Length: 371
Image 1 (cartoon, one colour):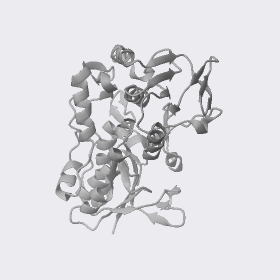
Image 2 (cartoon, rainbow, N blue to C red):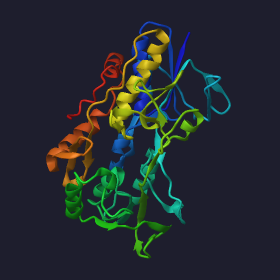
Image 3 (cartoon, helix red, strand yellow):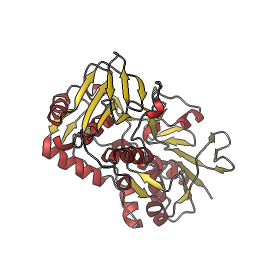
Image 4 (cartoon, rainbow, N blue to C red):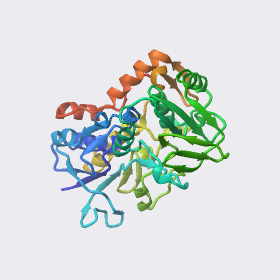
């Protein structure tokens, strides 16, 4: 009997497991997913500060399709022995799919323990508990990437928000395409933007900025920077600046090891690598899981062929902005953009309980978002 082992219970891990189960068919191939949590977390929903809305019970996806869930944290990976360590025990594998996701790069400033974040359900619950569903608070949001902008515009409906960005423009990684729409939305919502500064220190009552300015606030939320899971360092292979493993077009790192999602630096097209998002994690998971199982069963492998790149940035009460292509050409804004964003937030939820529907979805490479 052969074993496909998937490490990670996010978009890439869950869909890897489902795709492997689909390829398995009536064979005796075993598919196991290792994750310490009982829920899959829909991270694109975290900025809404509703922890329950972000959780999907893993057993309702994995049990119907015969995938075993081992609730444990991986402490080591030995690719020579083909073994994954779980603290006091280990699990062997014939093919491994590393889909352990990414995490927020923690701030290294004095008083960093006072910072909040929305990198996890626990972080969201902590922030939501601090705000107590009240209005009239002051919040400092550090970083104007996707997470920072979505959180800042969400909070602006309930209080005063100051957005801190070390670059001299808002959303530096988003490029100039959507920037006028973003700036107009921030102005409409009354979000105060401080550019060209960062945080020097954090206290219980606010922050001190690098230019010496001080802001009194109820919460300070850190959203700046993401890094691949540290488990990628356990794989003897090349990694990029985000810690992601270099993979081929079939998401193979080498030999028995595949990678998917935020831990994999795959090519989205000949000129661009994927970005860390569920838009790519889902089809990467499906391709990696398919290939790990197919490799063992002597079946054809598939290339990772994602949909054309798009983005849809939630801008709170100001709507949303939908862009296409790597230059992020603006296609929809305002209410139309918001309707599409809400559609996406629903579409990312996997099917539950219905084995046939889960396996059908596992074989569908497209995310179904217009491009």
